[in-house]
Image (cartoon, rainbow, N blue to C red; front, top):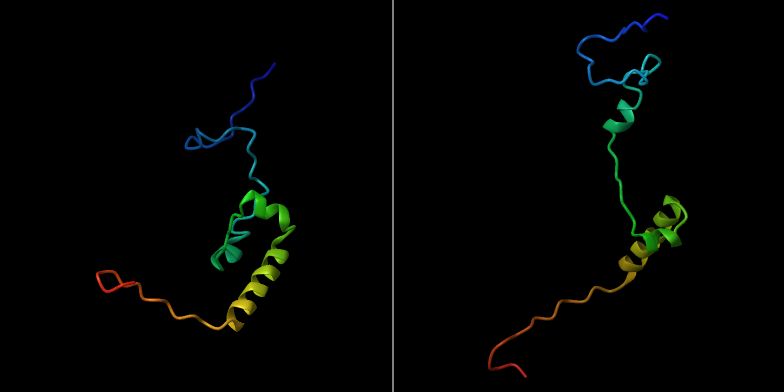
Length: 85
């Protein structure tokens, strides 16, 4: 019985033999990655209500429309001291 020949370069001591990147494509997702990503993690109870990202986006767009229509309230100034009621 012959021993298997180790064809890995000496610098790849940490790479296990079962990892095979011979058919990998260099930079396959580089363009998409350079455009940026926005990852938002939903709480489990929220994710039960929304089935996918499109439903979350629709709900948020609805809230934005409502918020833009609502009149803006001015903040009350809280006064402290002897002259307050």
